[in-house]
Amino acid sequence: MEVTAVLFDMGGTLFSYAAREEMGSASVAFLQRVGLSPDDPAVRDARRRAAEEVEGAYAARPSFLHRDLFRDRVARTAELLAVTVPPDVLARFDVEQRQAVIDHLVPMPDARETLEGLRVRGLYVAVVSNADDDYLGAVLERHSLDKLVDDWTSSEEAKSCKPDHRIYEYALAKAGRSAAETLFVGDSPQHDVAGAHQVGMRTALLGDPGMAAPLSHGLEAGVADFEIRTLIEILPIVDRCNGQP
Image 1 (spheres, rainbow, N blue to C red):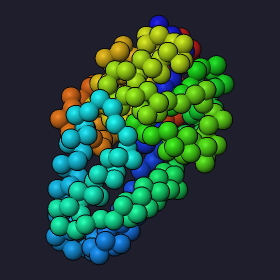
Image 2: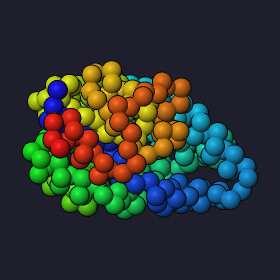
Image 3: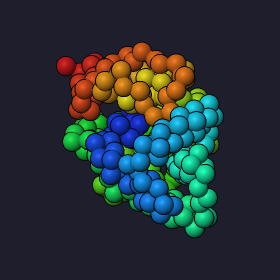
């Protein structure tokens, strides 16, 4: 069947994590406000343990808010070190964490060209992301990519996080497309490939399949229909699927 719709993951796919360290600046500021040094070996160990505990617990949930995940991760770090955190410090972290992601999550070099190419071909284009509403829309609008997509779906809106099947079904319903005519593009074999396959979509995996995406702990990896190293490779894939030379 021809491809009439292409759905993209956001982080790690349309947008790069190259500035990952800068996106973690809110966590560093949080630690300093509660009197902890990020360079202290005990603090580094607590951060690692907190991330494993919290992310492992969240990965098993079919739906959650990322603002809760981020907050629980730093709060658990402080708890492991027997540090009491005032509510206003956690509230400030929420604000700064969101802003750090918006400021430092930047489009892949060929994201705009790829979206424009799909639009020229008359395809429906959307973003489907495990992100909260106030992250997803703000990131797209900051870089004017909101003007190059027909719609976007957050896990908060769908009340479902990839790889749970409901977020895919929700996005398909918004698109008015069947799974068979839809291609899902992402960077996670667990979230984007296995999740999209379970509802019948074809998939394209961007990047190194050996790199585990966040919150992929214990999840089954899928084998993509196509593997790509750059987003622009989607255009000839779509052309071939649609019988174009």
